[in-house]
Length: 304
Image (cartoon, rainbow, N blue to C red; front, side, top):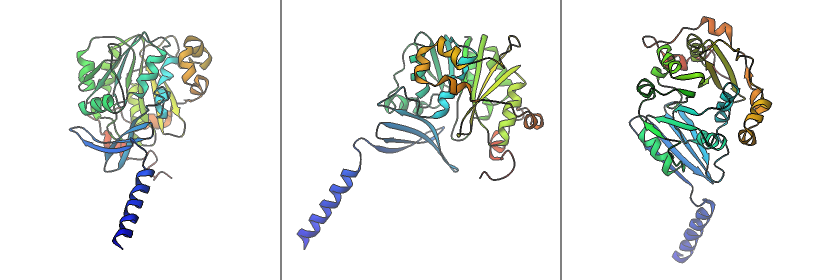
């Protein structure tokens, strides 16, 4: 009987082992700034932030195909190319798993992409688990994004804000004063780019705050995901609110066109919700109830 039980035990063990893909893992990390989950399934590694409300996907990379944009909204970030097709110097606040970085450097090999990441553990995991290899063209500064913008005097052709911690962006990166600091760091034809979520009251407040600083603002929606990518410029002429076609950007950058359907991206353009924005309040350093607004549904009803 003992012999039979042993056979059953080892048979069950063999079956369980056979079902688990080699190299897959699920790991948790608690840092000063984040509660992170890292999960590898096959060749895809996901970085998620944990909170009381659940887990939020921060980034994901396909190690077998690093130029595949696993997280849909990272593709929409490239809508900045409709306003500035030849970025030479780019700042990205928020590193995540650097999925965007790989496609950007493939499409713009002569450009420089400076990243700023608050959490040193995110930077470490990005390198050790998501196979990101910083170079002199993709440097990373580990510090607060707003502090970097204050101290660094460079001019940026794209300045991208994608610094989510779980489901929200830190309040001091959402204010009129910070957006003014960003505008001051843009080159003459530079583009400010930020990732917003559109299903809460914060969305309209974000847009009104951005419009209070930037005279021209255009929106691109990642279909079915709730993400809206805002592209804003600090000049009034030429009129960029009608600019941007997939065909023009495809001609300007065939490498980018080979990775992204630029015509489909151009079609993701959406209108600014003017009525909701008119009723919203501008967020300032003295008034920035980001978490409260982010918890309030835009229509005060549960999302169905």
